Amino acid sequence: MDATYSTTAEEFRAKIQSFLADNLPADWQGVEAMPEAERDPWLEQWRQRLHEHKLLAPDWPAEYGGGGLSAIEHVVLMEEFTRVGAPTGIPTDTLSINMMGPTFLVCGTEEQKQHYLPRILSGEDRWCQGYSEPDAGSDLAGLRTTAVLDGDEWVINGQKIWTSHCHLANWVFVLCRTDPDEKKHRGISFLLCPVDQPGIEVRSILNAAGGRDFNEVFFTDARTPAHCIVGEVNDGWNVTNALLAFERGGDATTVPLVVQALLDQVIEIAKHEDLLTDPVIRGKLAALQSRVSALRADGLRTLTAMLEAIERPGSASMSKVQWTELYQDITLVAMEVLGADGAAHHGIVTSVPLPPSTSSGNDPATWLNHLLCARPASLYSGSNEIQRNIIGERVLGLPREPRPVAG
Ligand SMILES: Cc1cc2nc3c(=O)[nH]c(=O)nc-3n(C[C@H](O)[C@H](O)[C@H](O)COP(=O)(O)OP(=O)(O)OC[C@H]3O[C@@H](n4cnc5c(N)ncnc54)[C@H](O)[C@@H]3O)c2cc1C
Image (cartoon, rainbow, N blue to C red; front, side, top):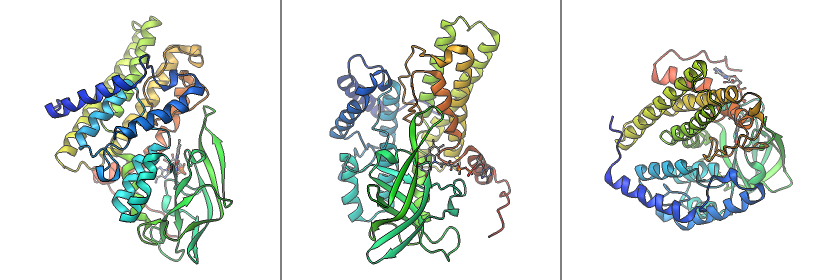
């Protein structure tokens, strides 16, 4: 494995470094270091700046307002942003720019691309994801929300849950059963629905840290035009999977940098607390560092495969299991190092965008908040048990787990 980047990639890195140096505030310590009231307005301005420099959607084609960057340029850009803790957008951009935009590009019509992509870039449209339901999470195809055509409109009834940032979004992409007589994975359509309407009620659910990240969304005769569909009627499962691939892949080389930055902070605190000579703490930190280094090496292997257009089955699942469990274990060791002080302001503000990019709790500068925000990481984007099933079946070739009997 060659861990060096090409000269061209390094030249591009220098360009990004100078963009960041010229545009971030001189005393930049991360968004979380700003007074709370200043964060959102600054993020909106920063997003606009990224858009003007074609850095908001770096890998979308230039003809749709993207940066048209190559895969390696995008990786270099993400590495530099991660290194200094610069946001790549606002919270809803995870869904709008990283998932919905690419889904339009791959599965949408030309008309949809021309209509929706500029509105995502301008910030006029902000998307959220209506997949999970109270009885359909890992078993997503068991979803029960229905949509029925009434003239030139779909009428949607049902409930979604854990809908991240729906309170900040004006559009939801919603998976609906459009043919109840079809088999489970068929008869599902991928509809696009405006959030601000009488038929939609958004109720927030506070996360364990007290932050407002996700919601329950109730559809009672909600309406959307018949043309607001991606893919064919009853063929939404293919679109669903295309979007999930964008959700789970793509961060193999940058996530290790984020996790390393978090671990470095714990090591700093252990030094400060004079605990680096404690054999138990030292052993735990060394074990975590080995895992971060292994994650980084694996990320580079995925990058090499990507650049050589070699498929690496299961790599997104392997990366997801490794980084989420590391993230959780680092926060546990941090609490051990800090003891009761873990619940207090620790003085070292996290300047890295934690995965997921918005860990909004009561006080982002406490390790207790990190500890709580790390818990759901092994659930979202498909639980780690499901990822292990994928690795077992598709990478190791183990027998498929027994499926429930139909009905
Ligand atoms: C912070 C956060 C944000 C989220 N944001 C969104 C969002 O924006 N939009 C959205 O649609 N959803 C969202 N989700 C929901 C997420 O996708 C689901 O939580 C996830 O798919 C698991 O589904 P579930 O919660 O229904 O758990 P279940 O599917 O009921 O699973 C319960 C437990 O059983 C295990 N399990 C289930 N099936 C198997 C199996 N076959 N083999 C082994 N173990 C199994 C699971 O791993 C889990 O531990 C979010 C979740 C979280 C935590």
